[in-house]
Length: 319
Ligand code: ADP
Ligand code: F6P
Image (cartoon, rainbow, N blue to C red; front, top):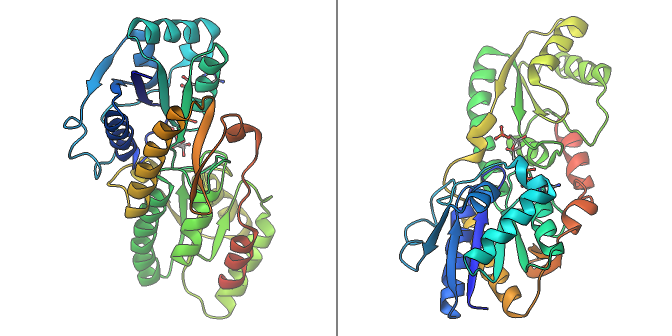
């Protein structure tokens, strides 16, 4: 293996730069050249590439976002797009590709692999909704960002004795919402994995009010419903006047936490090691502290479940 490519795709996540750095330096250490492909599969199809060196990935481990930039590329979902991408990889004499992204990006990687091209996936998304790894790159930082915001909201919620609804990202999964809710000591969390009952929530709010609680924080995973919609339901059913905060893309930015910088460094190194062993069509992940590989399809075929203990914990602690 002489020359490898690396790209970041889908939603950016804190730690992607640390992964690019680790891939580049591990590859160069092992006498390979590295080509950075800009703007995910979009840049691959268009031939938007940049050679990466030891120094060009210096000073980025702590930076949020991705120096290679990222994109969502509808063209790559179609077979012609994948074939065009493959042609580009051949034009640039790239022998293997490392894709940093979420399960959508891994689908694209899998399509390339099916055409016989060696590909390794590195899981990077704040959503943490991928099996094959206990944690995806960016999840920990996003949880910490959400936590900091929720703590600020608690200050004002408590001063004004108000009910706050905080909408967090996560697409169709509740990992980010659950983690942030437990960490912030939220009274209630709405998760896409758990059927929502408005009556139960209203009962809980009434009970809390009756025993003297003057403010409450409810975390709403975006996959359940917009916080604005929940506010309307709470007003109509219980007469509650809730304030709403949508954390939005702030959760995707910022410097990676030490956990994410280390995870990304280990997975980046692990991806190159996997290529050296001749592996392809796999993702690297960290399971119980070990760096392991699993087939790319695991990321979407196996459903990662929310921690049942965490779910009952929030129920217990939010009384
Ligand atoms: P993420 O990787 O964060 O899950 P997306 O789901 O938006 O983000 O996917 C990122 C990109 O991966 C898409 O824009 C597209 O180029 C590619 N992709 C997604 N799904 C597929 C698919 N089924 N087949 C091929 N490529 C795909
Ligand atoms: O997958 C990461 C994520 O931030 C999701 O949590 C969210 O639903 C989505 O991307 C937002 O996508 P966009 O950046 O296109 O608005």
